Image 1 (cartoon, rainbow, N blue to C red):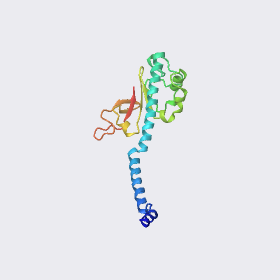
Image 2: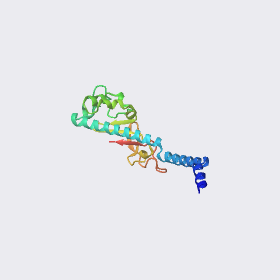
Image 3: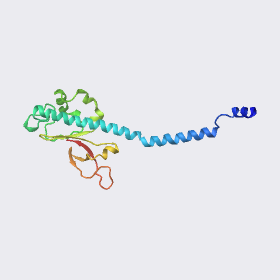
Image 4: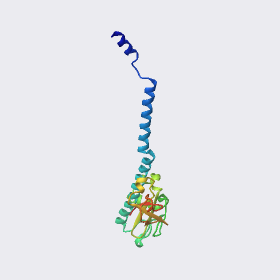
Length: 182
């Protein structure tokens, strides 16, 4: 019996083959987990959420400005345009930092100054406005946001139009889909 116990104590350990099999199984599980999570899609979702928030905030700031001034910053409703702001009834600008409209909203307290620092978010916004309306849109990058029922608009000359169909669905896909906030 003593010899048997000594023999068992000397051989207590894992062989190289056993260790390699366990490491291989763990590697396969890790690869499957990374493929399931898709980190690049998660980054795109986060960026889309950031741009969506900026889009909605920009529209809300214009609505608040309208409620206090009875005109939008670009001079709708016969009111004079804010100095440096585009004075046409349809604004076709992809970079809202380049107009005085943003400065008017910040100066009036409708937007915070930090809004201009979020260049990754606001550079993707396309907006248009009439005498009494403003629409801001952006083109989503993530697959889940492209399949959102609100992501079905096309932007032609800065003006969003309902493209019908659904984005990201074969057969009824709309090219250049945008998510819009009205």
